Image (spheres, rainbow, N blue to C red):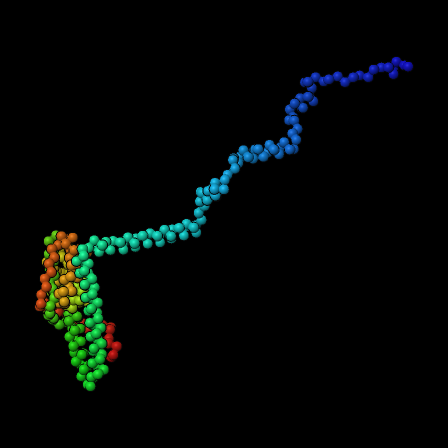
Length: 292
């Protein structure tokens, strides 16, 4: 054999650790299996989202903080307004009934008597009108009967309109207001209460009170239909005294209201009250009888 065949082949010798290939291998991360990567991602997701929530916690998280739309806000405001109005109404009803709840037994009996008297007056008026109709229907001379009723009705309307004087049983209401605290609206309440109790004619300090009467405050006094009056205010009222006086003295009524204003109120019954202040008859500008 020749020497060329026996020449040994050069063997691979380990490269130093500082060669470029070894440095690249160190810098690259080791390959991670796919299953391990998936497990790592699930652990990271669980760490980010935190611990699992219960059903109640998810419900609370869904409704709070609330997400309010404009329509929901409008509905809420309307419901609040409705509830507030109902509360005020209930409170006002409670206040109006507080006077009756605290009233004495005799005061409650007096109020019931006043209501019964008003009902009886309405029944009497109804019966009177029915009697007039019956007389007209049964009278042999219906024209004469109608004339008589017309004359009587004219007198009644003259009293109500203040164009004729009147006299009869009634009361005198006197209000002394030395403190100057009585206002026009308080006197108007007294007039309205007297009318509701059946007053047929009223005169205040020489001024006849009619359906169109108005009251206004005027310095230290009050004006009635533009006529200034000062205290003491004197009401001359024709009507049934047994109805008029209790109507003024009911709990929370006219007398108690005026006494709270430190005014002195007296009510005197009389068998004869004269109301002689007159109002001029005024022809209406536009209204005419429908029978014309």
